[in-house]
Length: 225
Image (cartoon, rainbow, N blue to C red; front, side, top):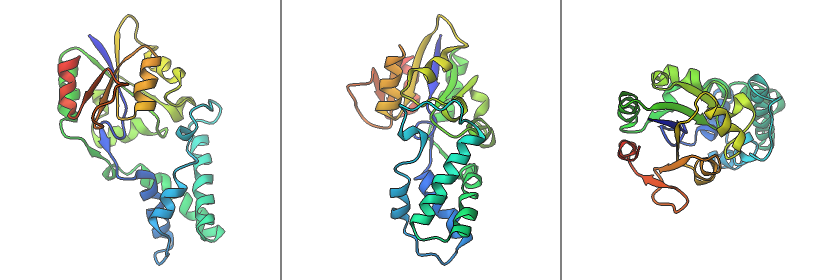
């Protein structure tokens, strides 16, 4: 039997420009008549996240401290885009609530069927994700957390894929098992997984010579494992 290490966003669920959209929604709530361009927000969101600098470890800045750092990034982005300080502060504090809204996430077709069938076959599903600290709670709200035996999330431990530490953390509860890393990022999931001694499956991204396997539909993973 195998341990299936699943990425979340872009692999199991699809969220359309999640962070940029949430930052835009937050300022729209606070300043309904603003003229801030969504594309300008997207440019601001291209940097500033812990997964943008995976070479930097931050075990002392996890959980609420991770969010505190992110709120500062949202605040500075709003200021850069011309929002006044009081309104920028109010809007930045609303982003987390929007991010944790289940309706923002669309589960990929066949994802639930694949996860359920994998469990029935005796395999173990685990989450291994570069993501915010409350990912497990969000997945519980969406109704899919029960398909997974454990959750290893970067903002909870202070290491981002493709760093080996986050993969080792996910592997800790299991010994002598065959591991697969399943994800949509060549750098984070495929190269990171290979360096951690896992077989790798790239999903939703066509073919890559870096991956051991590539599939367009999650259900096809069952033919591999």
